[in-house]
Length: 247
Image 1 (cartoon, rainbow, N blue to C red):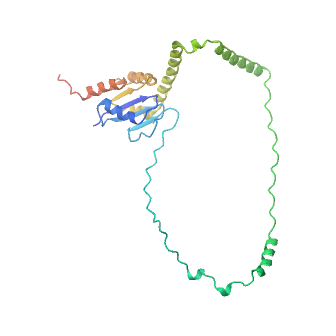
Image 2: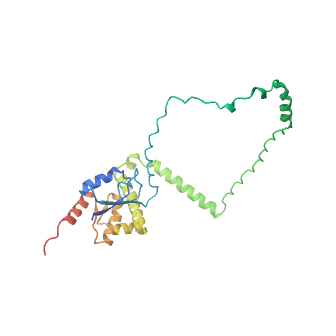
Image 3: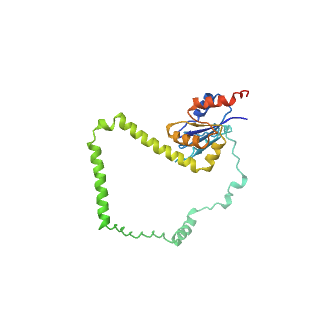
């Protein structure tokens, strides 16, 4: 029976990455299930067992099959064959074409003249929204002043502080924490995802955004190893393959 690994990821993964996963884990027949926040960069149905997208976006469409080669067309055209009935009988040809001209003119005169399309009626102008008054006006004014104050403060802050390493680190940590919490909440709310994790031999958090979900899964499922990164997953699979000691 093949081992099963569940990969927790919040980044966009290419299809070739899963070949690298099998190589790093030392098992070309391992079953891979992915719980991703972002859709893969291309079609991966032939690379993994399942890929469950729990974040925004859509899964890539299946590539179109290769077109079949078209049949070769001969450059020589077949000889044309004229049917006997296609040739007009000389006796049926009208000698004087001017005789049918008056009849054609009468038919043209009998046709009704084309009617002009009706002109569209002018649309009424949209009614403008009434301006806020009273308490609403005060709230709008306060919100406008707050937005203006934030813009002014952002301009006054020196660029050296904005681009400093501590500020970048704090911004990155805040974004990662928010992503990690959202990812874990989505994992916890999906029954199909939790059922997939229950069947796994090892659960691997691949990036920083999946660490929070991995830690919570480790607290909830002590019987299933939950690790960070593929090297730690390789050690867990090596222990599963090792024969149990005596006693």
